[in-house]
Image 1 (cartoon, rainbow, N blue to C red):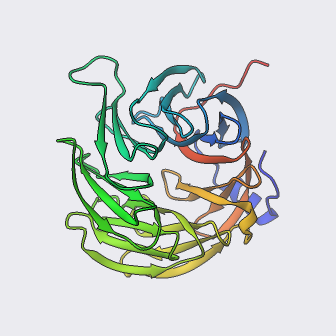
Image 2: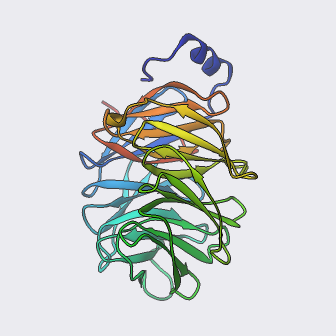
Length: 329
């Protein structure tokens, strides 16, 4: 259940109930995913996964969730409504998949940090050509990925090489590398695909690029150890999840200026990592792996409404519009 919700925040929750949605959480410390009903705040299912589940992507229709096994070389596909494992896809020779995006054309794009590659996977079992394709980044620590709205390009944050690699997803080739900060990790595109946002966890900055040319447009100082960056669905604001101080920095995307800081826990021991907005951009969900909870934030008000349950070291997050059914026991 949600924990420690102040009276005012509880009143806000009652005044604006959530539509039916399921939060999918990758519990990397116990090899499971949790399915949490966002309307009630209850965990309804916990499912076994491959080793060290991390990032999660939901299919375009919301019916399935894909979960990478960061400790192996597979991607699990789950039916969100029933909780059934649909398939475990082996992406060999790609190893240690991490960042993950599910494209509208039915492909999955995953970083493979253990092999310095990108894996492009066709979800459907039938079709032309190989089901799994590998594209070398030629960089170290290829950790997170963002994909353009037209699915033509992927952008990969390489932590150890301090760079971003651009991949041509139509021809399955590498376009080039761009140096970025000290240790880039979080990466996101504006909804229109024109600007690329990269969080440099080693430099406490966000770098903004023209996505077509990779020309740098600006840098913004943020909180300590910005480990993720996400944009509101309308593109007006960007936000960073600051692992080092348990906060969120909010940036006006038009002016590239910080407009406020949201104190989530204010404590680095909470190990604040993955962050995502709901589909309306009203709520922000942030994984606090150190306490096995997911903070739920009213974005407009900058208030922590409460904390949702997760398994051990819950980290990767995704939201499906599909209701999950509770377990029978």
